[in-house]
Image 1 (cartoon, rainbow, N blue to C red):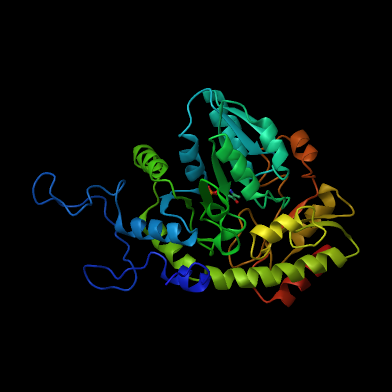
Image 2 (cartoon, rainbow, N blue to C red):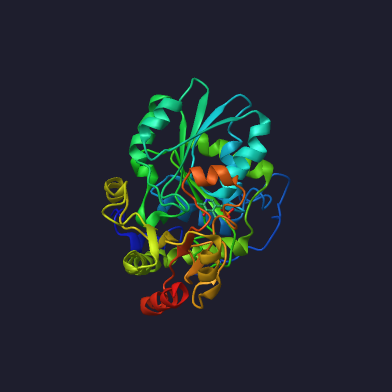
Length: 383
Ligand SMILES: *Cc1c(COP(=O)(O)O)cnc(C)c1O
């Protein structure tokens, strides 16, 4: 029986096998660095925990299942997962990436990989024609984030995947904002899905972790080789926490979506609010594509005040009581963030503003608290 569309059943049972040594229903935290061999080279498939750990393997199986992929790989952070993908490239290769994406991805590309002679073309990927136009014979990777952080732009994954296939490029989609509950890029033709598991997959703001999911065996073997050779693996305790988080992803996401819709409507109707960025609005420029490739619109949104100054934004950011002022997102609790000075400070101001990320932009990760309390909190903070 296929559980392809029964997301709740899939998320609860993903990767879960009773522990073979005891029958423990939950995969134990195998807190070990090495495994005893009975004679040289005679072992149970486990030699050293950088290469093999049963808790991590259970999680990697779950990662594959939740993105409808064949393989999953876990990393010590989201950026470590991104870094592993970048290590598939060689000097001279070219990458097409979104001009509006997570600041840490931009930092890795521009500060670490540019000096290794990888060339980046930053385009507005929400129009797939821009991606096609930037392809050269040296393009090896197309990096897409959708919805984007923090402006909630949407890229048509199937359209970009088709361009990638035609030109033999890897298409990697950062699916952190949507989570596998709302969107499955492999089904739309992407080569690799990347997540910061720190966010919705973990879901409780208590772990840093990243992952890659994919279908191609050869690419999986290359990435596994990179994972063990460069060593950015998560510890077993962190793997256990993310395995636990995945079991409630569907109920958390349902509430994030319900609360998100109400908060977006509240903000849009507020006389002091200028613009709300949320892909669930019917007049969002990419709403049709969002509706086509997503099952819901989530709890991430950004907004600007009519007074788009840092001072006005700072007043809101410092006055909330339920929303905590912090980087990160996707946890059960609501967070408020100032991208220009926090998550996106590594993007030069001129470029930031040219991309539409103004000084006054405020980003919300709407949590799963009672929505009336969330809205009351925003109402008193905006004043
Ligand atoms: C947080 C985040 C990352 C980086 O992940 P870490 O786990 O912090 O290393 C990458 N992409 C997006 C969209 C993120 O929100």
